[in-house]
Amino acid sequence: MAEQAKFEIRGLNFFYEKKQAIMDLSMDIRANEILSVIGPASSGVTTLLRSLNRLNELIPGTRKEGDILLGGKSIYGADVNVTELRRRVGMVFDVPTPLPMSIFDNIAYGLRLKGEKNKGVLDGVVEQALNEAALWEDVKERLKAPASSLSGGQQQRLCVARVLALHPEVILLDRPCSGLDPISTAKIEDSLTLLKEQITIVLAPHNVQQAGRVSDRVAFMLMGKLIEEGKNEDVFAYPKDQRTSDYITGRFG
Image (cartoon, rainbow, N blue to C red; front, side, top):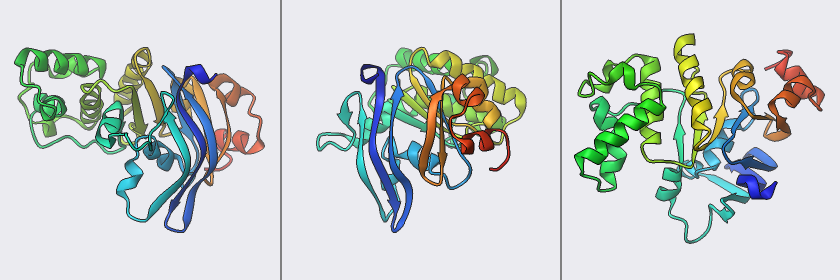
């Protein structure tokens, strides 16, 4: 239903120079849900995620057709501040990218850029963000330690916390668990389930099983086209398209 939509994607086509990566895609993304977008390589999944906060514009030679509405307003409007859009719609990539500074300063970095200097405010936001990313108990005694001293799974949760500190409305996660061990993966998945009460999550999972565990809804893409989307249990138990069935059962991909 339109009133529930956080994002409304309308007739989206996206091109890398002459190569078309997304083809006439229309879909709503609902508020306070986890939407998993699945598909094999070169299906347009990452391109779709990066379109939602206009990160694709940083790549020379790209262009789009169609529109994307956030909260009912086009993200391409003349009055849209792209920096503010990317605060509202944060992104976490598959490879953790902690900044070369302490754990605390990684989380406080974005707030300080906005001019926040109050130590009490910074302390509170850092603790809250680390708690939401299931990392606080691991690091609360060593917040001044370099972020590079954390394990891979901890670094990924740190990157999630860094985005959460800016109080986004949406988080985009591009295969955030692809290089992580099962315990770290489980912690991130548990965090996502709690976070959706406050924010909308769009996830490109690192495998179909993860989509099955954490999603409210699932969208399947193939060669730039949206093949089908729906409730998690419907797509996995009763896929409407044979290609969806073949993908989720491992016949290709």
